[in-house]
Image (tube, rainbow, N blue to C red; front, side, top):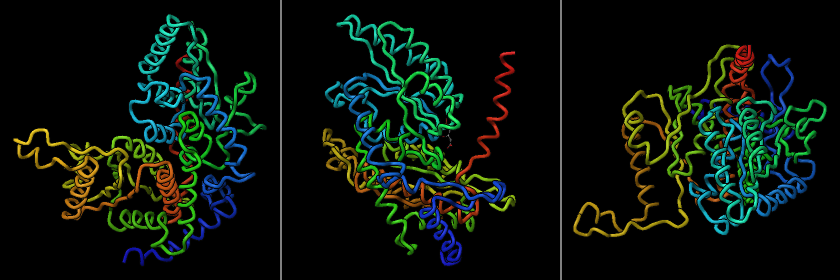
Length: 458
Ligand code: PA5
């Protein structure tokens, strides 16, 4: 009934998505002089000459991957928000927690990976620097080879304080350190007429450059060179990832609501929020290495839909508050709230149908009935039973939940999932009539912070 109620709005939203795909523009907030807004993320899955991802750009990424394998020991990916969260997803899903402890052979000779720039935290930055210096000294005593560090600096604006402060601290420390060789790769807005600070530096110092393309906001960039440079440095299958996004894009062109995953998801979430007051969305994947998908989605939802004014300038204060959760962990923490707290949430699950290398729980204590009862079941099966039980318990108490199922946790299916979520947010922006592609609230604090920092220096 709710979907029928919104049928006309859905038609309009779908038509706007069609225009966005065909022209690369979407109707913007009126305050932007009525000029339509350039939105190109729906082009990113298509590898074509002249597109954001072209055969030539993919070839450059392959070269970067080869270079990382042959000439780099460590990559430190520096970025924040959209210049970090997608990269962390790719790393977690592909590499897992223990990547940096694996041997070179086990890593396929790809470098060890660290993330920085996603906070201005002196302790963690100092820890990474000290650790690198220690490793360089150990290498020195074992043959003298220098530690080869690539600083992969990612910033669309090229001047974000969080990213650039960490970059400067690390660049300074590593260029002065004994037995460390530093290489910088800059990923920034490629505009040559108005070059970003990072671009200017890259030109001056001769650093290799990749692009954060025009028309793709930070939170939509995982399918561009922002995500793909890191992907190349870990041997993540870029082509399958883009193929998944591409197939999802094709599915999302379907006019039939029930065959269009992004439109259906957006419609249900919009109805839950607008008609039933469910304006908190808990993103709860089942599986540790999917937690960063939840963190990535939180930015996508919060920055895109959390808007005070609609496109006509009317105050609407729209948006669901996103919450990061992970199953089963948060069933022992947040689930009490989900099950009995305010009736204001949608719990969005992600499940993996088939885990690679699933483990059978063995019957090691046959004399203990409770433990013997779960023996013979795989951990993947137990995880899914836990998720289903959570969903059933929520449903039995008028609580809303939904599930996205991935047949397997592969680059292809990850590409499908991330793309569907991005497209769903674009649909919901149209349904709610808010500009899903700007972030005036983030810019507001940046305007206050700049002068405050200057004042610190007297
Ligand atoms: O979604 C966004 O636009 C933001 O979260 C940015 O990604 C974030 O502020 C980082 O900006 P930049 O890439 O310019 O350093």
